[in-house]
Image (cartoon, rainbow, N blue to C red):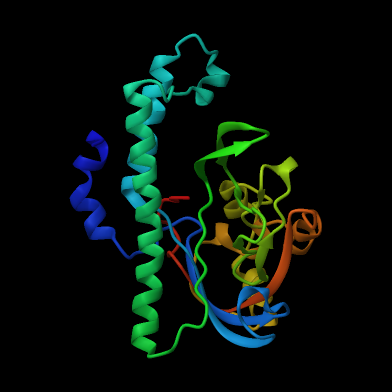
Length: 269
């Protein structure tokens, strides 16, 4: 067992089933299905979309093993120190691999519980449930060799694999099916991606403009930070157009009710 996960066990229990700050969210919206390959007949459905992570314990795991890797590779110049690594042939590397996979299962449990609790309170039937990881590492075989694929800012898009590619709090997200493009290592974008840093967003954007945009799109925002408004993100339609060779679009999600952490909380994404 990793000393980090052991130390944070009670913290992880306390935060189980919660979403977190940064770009994490819970949204209700309209899902327009255009391709029955997702398991639903074409038409419109009420949908719940969430983005949650491994919370404080996951951040602690990342911080601990990043510092450990940096200490193991003092030979790297300062500007490359964040590229330090732990060999999977070492005890530290194996410990980190186990801790990372545990945090992946923990993030999935958070997602599952959020959806379970909301649907139970609403008393509704779930017709389709899709969960997929991103910002994670997998052991996979590519070009005849077992490798580690780390999808930072990316999500699995193997042939027929369902995934979610969200835009922002007032722009569409998409339910997709991977095409299994070997040149992209069976990967696709996991979202629109930021167009500006959080600092720049807070310094240059305004709630006056953001609220006007939200009203125009018919979105009710419960809470969020200014650094998460739609103008801080790239145009999702452009992003989707750039990866037609990676995924097929099965459905479109349009947000209507959005909850993010209030302004001022430390980002966890």
